[in-house]
Image 1: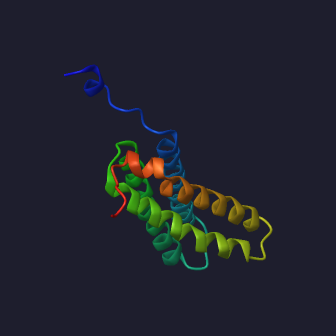
Image 2 (image 1 turned 120 degrees about the vertical axis):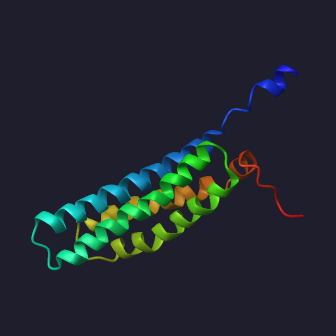
Length: 138
């Protein structure tokens, strides 16, 4: 074996950053889910069951970008699909937050939109695609 075969190629920065974006989104979903779940169990929401169900749903949805982030770090080609879906799902949520009347929700919408678009750009970048072993169709 030559020394070139023994040392793996370094992971592109774009791929690592895309994984970090997915991890950040997973953390935000789980944190939001825990907040809703605890609020539903201890607080006085309009609908306790709705708060609990929403919290559990957000926690479970947080698993998708978490698994995608791990796959991106391990250079698994399948991980790009869930990562792209997560970014695409974030865009309508960001739009809804931007159109809300609450002043605190507008900056959250801007931040979410920036993160989602950044994730899309990183995931669709040719260097990321090549690093994941995805080849263009002929």
